Length: 528
Image 1: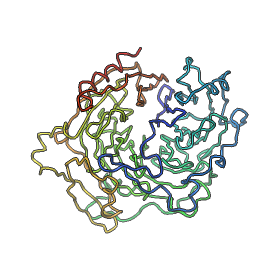
Image 2 (image 1 turned 135 degrees about the vertical axis):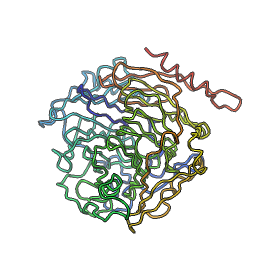
Image 3 (image 1 turned 60 degrees about the vertical axis):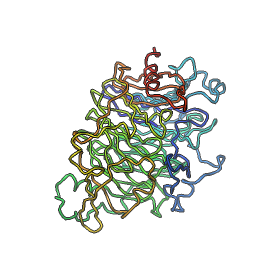
Image 4 (image 1 turned 45 degrees about the vertical axis):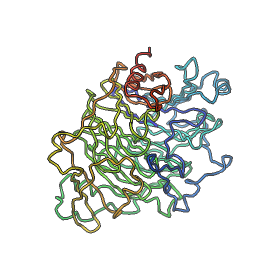
């Protein structure tokens, strides 16, 4: 649930939050068959690798007692990769006294990986702190499917390309992609694949997305399939940006491969530039990927197919998230803009103006989202926290759009299978009750939509409902919780902003817009 990049100051405050009970931060699609339909969207679907019998132990459920655990004791390790671990002197006592509502936070700062107990009166004193010698931890994630009071599966990605699978309760660990055996580039983002116990996805700095199994041994990687060298469709110049986008996505090893004895499980070449972040859709079928090449890509991970490529207004994209119902994707980047994209209609919905520098983290607030209105937030290098509300009805239609045919816009679809180029008119209407799971499966599986940058005059502009400087340093991450908002900055500070419980107003029990704004402002005004 976190992403962070090594800052110029050497501090790297990526964080993830979890509770001992089932966390409300878990996405709706994290289970294997979770589904909603109608206005709720999020539909039950296939699982990644579900059709490969050799991966059944990785994607299926196993008895907890038979689960493999990392074997190396990090406290007694003689590895030159790990310097030492510093446990709190009352580590065992503090763990024994915790309750089911305690909030634990993992934070990577500089060369250290910290485990914090936010329910303690001594929050600044970590439960444990690991120091590494040869690399910086850049990102990490906690598997909420396998967590228990006696076991946690944490994966950590490093600047060297190494990955550590770690159980902070037993202090045992295992090292994957050791010395960059599979990929030697830094791990920019890492996440467990929802609904799986063993599989996780790592984004490397060379633009690769790689699926690993925490229990498999590594082996030097040789592509099973050559990179895509098919001829470009007629009318596409060989040196054009579009040619690069179409040519470069390739699957060097498929999840369907019978050779699953060693890592990697799957290997995709996505971009020639560094991937900065990715996010799984709530139904676990898709992943939205942003990169320094200015592109947002939507990939069907089950079928390992690239579906859509969108471009930022200018500059690289740095962060991405999905709405809780899977209808929208939100990105932020170096153009100082937050952009809202409709997953179903395959188009940009609005550009959100309010930041004065790069946007580094975006997140939806699931406790302020319903079937009519969505709330999300963003933070950036301008040290500001911005909150945004939007619904289909409130997005005004730009004047310049009047020259277009109502309800349509042009987007180019390229089909490499038959070598033809054709344009398809995509619906510009936002259909809030659409069946999203089937939308991108219509037509050919080989079809890729490369969407041109929409002119600003033709795109709705959304202002924030709140903008507030909340730190003196660049902000790096934003996490919403039911009772608080968490922000981090490049100096390694983690701030928890308490907020009052949502009060229902009005005869129908709905919350009025004025109440939402007031509650949002009170988040800031009540914090020291």
